[in-house]
Length: 100
Image 1 (cartoon, one colour):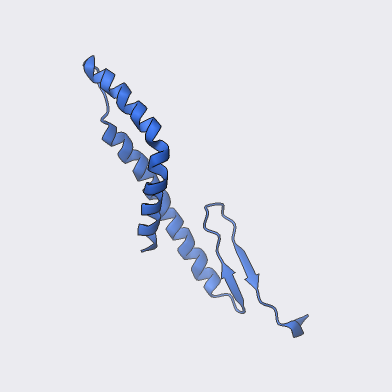
Image 2 (spheres, one colour):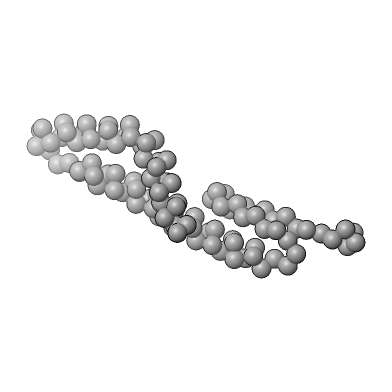
């Protein structure tokens, strides 16, 4: 379910930011078709772009799953996993006031 969430979020957020490049690619291909030059369909370009983000979604899901399962085993603490792709994790440990 988390993977689906990542994929939907990536498509919803990253496709609009790539729209100018996709439209430019389509315009260039349109001119190439008019000259009977070889071209790559815009759908392939968009498909490759989305495939890269689906791959990132899979990696982010795997990273979160690994971090979460490692932190869930922490003995007396609350674990917060940072899954932004930066590679950092933060763990807040509850410490008994008598242990000081």
